[in-house]
Image (cartoon, rainbow, N blue to C red; front, top):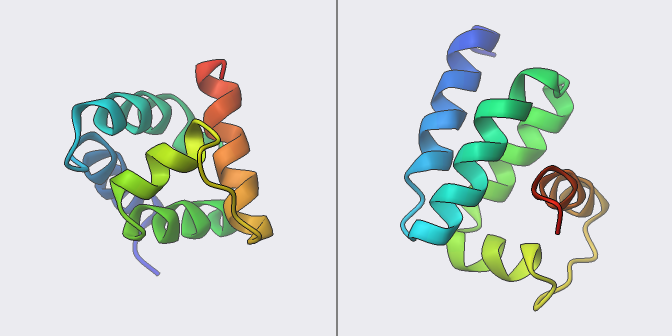
Length: 85
């Protein structure tokens, strides 16, 4: 696994440039303020969530779409709690 600091910096960058302004703001703010507090397993789950694409992440964040994946649910919950959804 990469150096943790570099990994987090890459995730923050990817979070800020997802493709849509709404998701960029949501994930960019979350990533800057929260990723250093996550453990490696949570970071890996966050990275996997990013791969699913910003339209899906936005739908999950505003409860338009639900997921059965517990790890994904936990990350989405952290994002919602951070932003006050």
